[in-house]
Image (cartoon, rainbow, N blue to C red; front, side):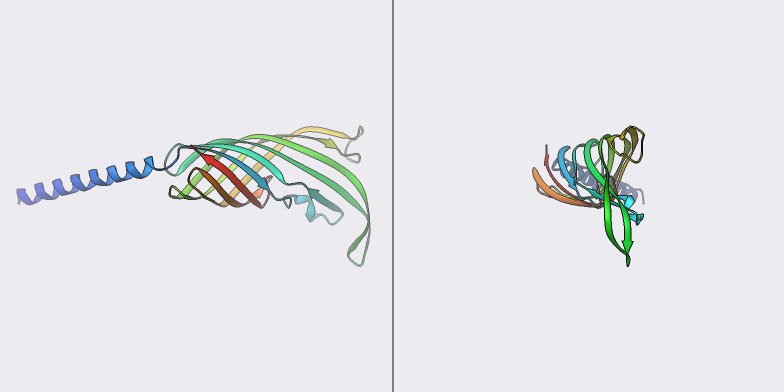
Length: 193
């Protein structure tokens, strides 16, 4: 009986050691750092809910750096820029906007920390979810919102990435679906090192 238990124990130890070695090899094939350029869509304005206010935004542009802390955990930071212009409606006819007036423009600049959880990790393909939250500096001209016609304030910045995918070993392309200041859809390109 002692020989059987000793044999089982030796088999489990050898198997665990082999599993650890194969995990190390897999982890070494994955890049530890990445630098990523992102372009988000202009559909991120929550002001579109109000029928008397119509928003139009340029794409958001971001530069992000991420470091793989664990096989599935990335930590990093992002610098982001977005421009949005607003108009107010003067009259509606049969549910359609027939006349409007220029309302203002705002620029937002953000530097925020980010976290990413990758659940599919291969050297050429990564799938992930993540988020960013922080503060942004908003500057612009809003004639109807202030006495001087200018705004300059600190606001909130947030982005929740529900699904992200990248394809490529060193240089890669990818996309994200999420919600927040960067938009609903983000197109990405980057470099892993």
